[in-house]
Length: 189
Image (cartoon, rainbow, N blue to C red; front, top):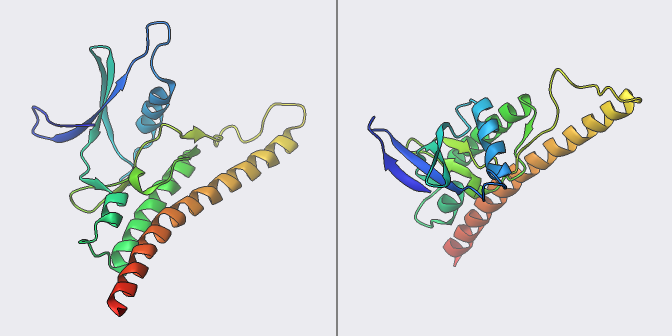
């Protein structure tokens, strides 16, 4: 990841992805991330500004974010109030809700994929492992037993949503809570 100040004066982050040999083509993970980020426009999801090939690499241009939640959690000089924790959790859930509304599963929820901007705004990032699990137009399959597939899809969507929520509460609540516990334990000594 590179930091760049463009002609517009806007600070952006540039992610460089090596393009494989000519017969291999562009990394499928990168293509999926580009496709999904072009569709997922939300204040709680990182903005993909542009992408371009240059010198055998694919460059993704993102809005600049100062840090990630993992760095904030690990920095012992930063105190997170209950209000901060609730705010981060709310922004994460709003971003996930938008993904789910667009039938997208992030599948890689962890603190270092939750980026924090200069104004404290938290945004979901790194959609390389994300998958589309259905669409509002295509809830039923055209197979011979559509109801079976429909309920399988519903179960999959429910499980995936529960996994996302567990990921959010697991990565934010557990990590942040651990630091608070360590702080209280240290203060008691």
